[in-house]
Length: 297
Image (cartoon, rainbow, N blue to C red; front, side, top):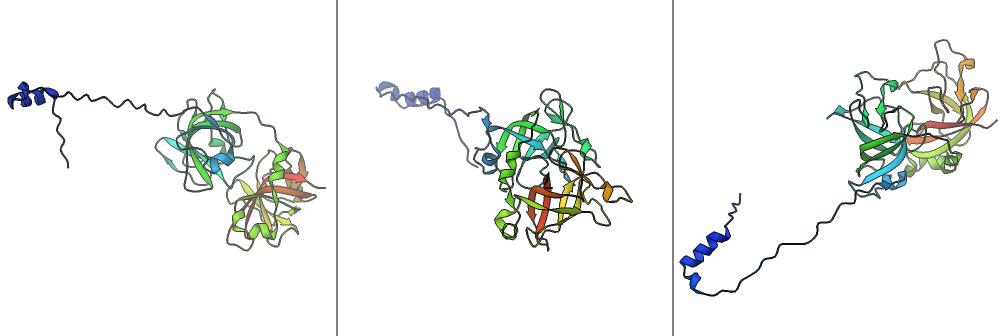
């Protein structure tokens, strides 16, 4: 370990005097303090798009503002340090693919999230907004927070400063960004977690169960690719979801809602399904998670 000594100017003067330095005229040396200005950090919030955030086009520790959807809770959660790390997605009903991971303080005050029990359900997620409202799974919100770039291209980090609940009106132009779910799309590794669509008719299996409590795996009959035999549809009562099935269900119980919220019998029509294709090393080459449902006939 280095030891540093600080010598006062008075001690130096006494030393010089004792050595006869007091009888000599010496040049005075003036030391000026370093007046270089310290660079100020720009804390002006940046209005950021999902593309900017996910590509890391925002500098670390910059305050960002973006609009997003509260995602469903995953099957396992990390708890610790008085915070919850929650996922937020760009599209309505999106549960897979690129997203933002937002750290929120636990509590019951504004801009905090209520603690979750050990065994939690989707209804347990309650985020207190900046104006005292409560945001839940599926709500459209505006996030203000500190951005941190992650090493994984599928998500980035934000430390929450403020969350505001917003009204949302579905914009059909989002469909223009989807690509047909063909063999070429499915087998291209660059399309993992890509936004796509598939056309077909649906049917229930003899036994239906939800492995995650949030979706059903439903059979699809289609001729757009050689692989897709099942799609995953959200359980619920909102747009682009299907009813929960009780024991002893029949095809009459297979009720789905399109993206406008209109109910249809799921086994009687042809649909175009928009969603995220997650590549996996299985016969179907992956899983298609339905986000929006459009009736074709």
